[in-house]
Amino acid sequence: MPDNLFDTLRERGFVYQVSDEAGLRKALEKPITLYCGFDPTAASYHVGNLLGFMLLAHFQQAGHKPIALMGGGTALIGDPSGKTTTRAVLAKEEIVANLQRLQPQVGRYLDFVGGKALMLNNADWLTKLNYIEFLRDIGRHFTIAHMLSAEVYKTRVETGLNFVEFNYMLLQAYDFLHLFREHGCVLQTGGSDQWANILAGVDLIRREEQAESFCLVTPLLTTASGQKMGKTERGSVWLDPEMTSPYEYYQFWINTEDPDVERFLALFTFLPMDQVRDLGKLEGADLRKAKEVLAFEATKITHGEAEAQKAREASRALFSGAGASADAVPVHELPRARLSEGLPATAIFAEAFAKSRREAQRTAEQGGLYFDDRPLKASDTIDREGLLRWGKKDYRRLVAV
Image: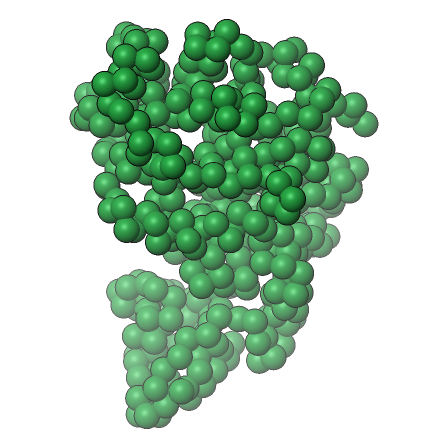
């Protein structure tokens, strides 16, 4: 059994790189304050953000105090990390609207009752900075040569790195300094693409406060087939139930590739590692049991136990062939009068699954579209309610309204 939280995090696969392992191990012998930043660039977070949330949750469960930093300020200029082109600039009103939808999602992973965790917005201090003072007090610690040596900037210089983006490292470093001064925060976490930005904060705290701080970054996850984590053919898997239903969310996890099951159980559930390893040993048809555990536990954390149970029951019903009773399957509604006239099946499928009509026609020609488990031809029409299936596992209930 690991005797230090750091060992637990490494065992579960969270640790990719750390600035000072010995120093952080010693610091973790007492409760510390740490943070991770999440920019509000969309109306929902997605599965790609989960690693950061889960890492903070593990720290909190071990008695430490996490800060979820909502980047209302840094989102105004855009993080160049991991991007080959400039991010679209968001309007202030859009950022505020995003924040209102995003904040409840974070509460699924962290307990904010009684100050056990904090949710802060860096717009509260970044938008109040005096530019000349900031350049004089903070900018003097950064050299152009050092910043251009960072991979995030090096790869963007030739494709077009603007001055606004070039300031992102300074602002992220200042966030760390501000949180150190105001909240005693000594650790920043993030994805490995943030390594240079986080190290800049560690260095800034050392220069400004002559104090020790740390950074820990998680790996950038891909699936066994090399696909970016959280992406499907239909796009991102969102945490907002209005954008990705609990059933669709459950299906994302239960369709995990076989080699990824044990790794994802360790990262995206709170199950003990002994149980994770036992589930990871399952093979063949039994491996679906492990996938079902992964899907249930991940969905329970994000959407609650009741929704996870509904999704599991629906998935089991469809897997066993009893799909008609699968009430948790996402619904696609059509006006009753329009449906009763009979509509091209490819048009209905394209609309229901957010695909193109051409994709639907091609899939039908390949035998991949089903209505109530009956394969459809590209020329078929549909004139009643029923269960739509695209491929082997993607379902929608067609409902007349």
